[in-house]
Image 1: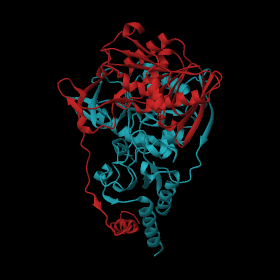
Image 2: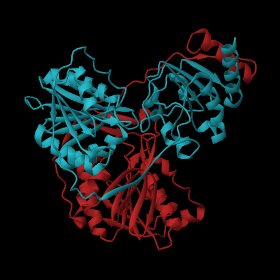
Image 3: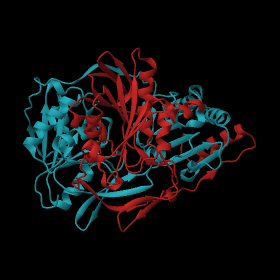
Image 4: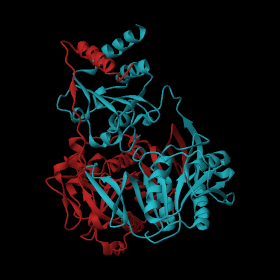
Length: 267
Length: 332
């Protein structure tokens, strides 16, 4: 069985606000001193793929597919170290983040998947950690003409079917579709496993395939459906914190309760 | 969008087998403001089964036309039936834009609608702004460090709106607006995705969405046992137990408890943030709370910047003492 996990490289989502710079002239966001990282939910998608690989009786090959501009091999090698078998990169200057809306990204990914040809399951994160759009997985499935299941908290494969526990308000539903299919993965799947030193070393020997847009037959378009007009840095409203004092830890708890009741916050 | 006289449609999501999702009324309010600017009509669209009462009730909200597609296939959410019903309704209404609350349902449905219509989609919008007569839709990006204002270039387009971002629409005594039944044919659809089971959690307590008080824990809680200490405090006050993302990822607590950008967006009267560092993705889900109380052993944790009350120390000792003091007071 062949699983493709689509992974996006994003500026570190844990970086402080000062690292994000607004370029007013070009109306875009630039980054100062931030390392690229794997997008958070895409890590969950890879973890879901590896969980299937762990438990499957048949041979499972997990390929990482990343489409973007100046993709960092050291960043992607984290995905290989965690247990993926190969890395396929489509790197092109035209994949400028600001130029890539969900349509363009889904189109480029679909073109790359068609070139890979041999796949059963495609796993993607529920949304990217930078623009949080949450559309690409569905767009990819539509362009490939295959089913898509969203908000997966658990993914398994049985025969020619993918079985997904999918988040709904107050619980989950069990959903199945015939392969090939796309599944969009949520964080409940679990954090991406941490590679050992040996796995890190081995990752350097795993195959890396590099394609350009010509190889996948993708033509960059300019037809954007949404346009960014303004960018600002919102200020987080700070509050005046009243620190509770106490001799011991339990005094702290008691005094906190008394302060809250005295101020009629509770009780 | 400017100059287009076709209606703005607000999608009325049906939840819990017969109620309108609360965020519908917030989205409606935002859309009513947009309609004033563009002099557009506001319509609502309900997809569901046995929804006549719901439709009748939302006539109190000043909507021009309420479209209803009522079909046995729409009793519970199924992406393909809902998409097919939406498309059939769309062809009749021909709106210039569709607005939805940003919910678990619309996270699934809105992109399907957008790709089906080849329409632009903006998800998780938190505000609107008028710029030279054109409405811009605001959305936090890059871990909420940046707020982007989007122009939707072509009609139709779709926007999903984050809950608690707008005040609910006004409910009028007077009912108005016409009801329009839309006939949909769905039974012949061969769904590619099959739902085999629905597993609802035995909800032990109050849900975070409905709670007036939330006791939330983060990575600092350390274990699922730790959450029992929080549950004791919550029980004492009739509060819900919530969490930031890490405890959900590690399975200490169930997904419904997650508060934050990709979990529930809440604004309770009182929010206890215990062992929560205050990552911006979490703050996005709770910073509108009226009073925030932070307990953390790290005095430098950013949660204290948004807190009204703070206690620096170990929760394992602070919280039981807090709980006991409240209990003693209730008895007295």
